[in-house]
Amino acid sequence: MSKSTLDPTALDLELEVAPFSSVPAPPRPARPENLSRSLFHVASALLALFMLRMVPSRGWLIAVSASLCAWAWSCEIARRLSPAVNEWLMRLFSKVAHPQERHRVNSSTWYLTALLGLSIFAPLQAAELGVVVLGLADPAAGFIGRRIGRTKILANRSLEGTLGFFAVGTLAAVATLAVFHGLPLPAMLLIASAGAAAGAVAELVSSRLDDNFTIPVTVAVAASIAGAFAPVS
Image 1 (tube, one colour):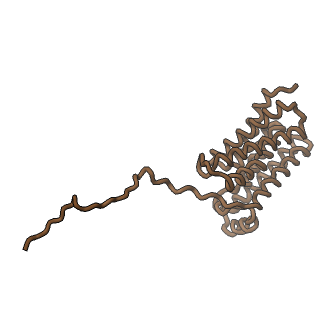
Image 2 (cartoon, rainbow, N blue to C red):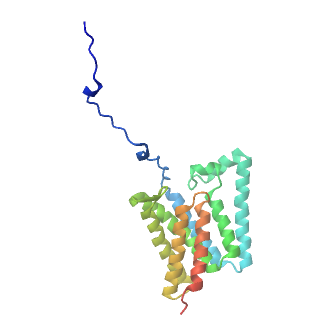
Image 3 (cartoon, rainbow, N blue to C red):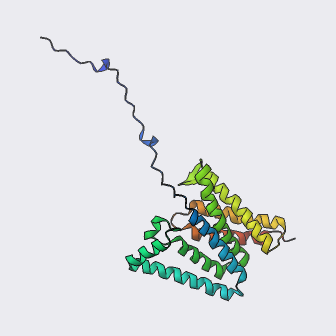
């Protein structure tokens, strides 16, 4: 009997091996749409704008903002000390809270912290733009990005959502300046677009810090700088 030998070259085998570099990392899951949270965003902006316009003095503004900020951080401390308090607060704000906020500082706390900083340091006009751009442009960016966002530029942020942020933020800022400050159109466009652009960048790159803190602060800083160069006549 003769032993047959197997010729490896006679086998027609094709192995499809994908190169390691071509395997993309799994994307970070996008946050689900939360209409209640978006409406809460808008309402918070309008309430903050009302407070900025109606309080009689800078001292009153700081006092009210500090009281709200102290209340928010007291809740954060209570949540850390008591799981029962944490669960109660999460149930109370279940319509507007993200699940991941169960074990981290709530976005509203960061927002009130930013509001206190604006009350102390920012010009009134810049503070107004900070809260308005956050309250209107941030939800708009999410709404647009979830529906037509195709061009991913960073994490879950899309070019379409970022451009939507800039457009809505600019319009909201121009409207605020026109109603309350009556600046010339070139000045309003410069200040509004600078603030909205800075806010869009802050929304895009905020990872370690909550964008409810970084956006209003960044918008206010950019609007203040642009205001120094804006034509007034």
